[in-house]
Length: 188
DNA sequence: TAGGCCATCTGGTCCT
DNA sequence: AGGACCAGATGGCCTA
Image 1 (cartoon, rainbow, N blue to C red):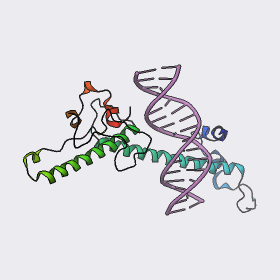
Image 2: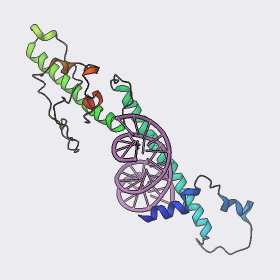
Image 3: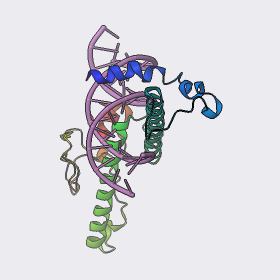
Image 4: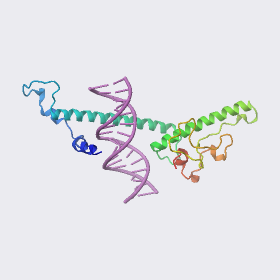
């Protein structure tokens, strides 16, 4: 545990001010003495510099990697329905919302297929499929235990075949929010 | 002020 | 060997 701090003290604190001093100190050409080069004999300072450079490069890559991840998350936010309050979804909210949203869309398709097969151009066949944006119903239990890797979300939803309330098919009214974000993302 | 969210650093592990 | 990925730690910022 303490290794982190000892390393930070000795290394990372001067990460931002590090200017390869040790390397430049050697002067251009690095021709000091005619020391015989014994294979892989590196001075302590050189080892430190190499280690620092490697760390800095790794930090840079890690930063870029996280930026890419955030860009992808932003792109995902872009294709998800906007929230009424226009506040940016957090990372976990975005992922859960996307999960619910995909599930709701697939349910919509499934129901539409069901109705198309059943009606066959009959009376109610022209009704558009319901917009199931509110996948997890407020009363449903959302399990955040991560056991949602099954084919459907872990929470129990009101049966798509017999929707409980008409508001299940539309955006909830803002004043009716007990928390629209939590409602949609499943975070309570 | 506590708690949530986030960015960053860091060391370890796995992969190419 | 070097890069990608991951998880833990830490500090900053913001909000209730």
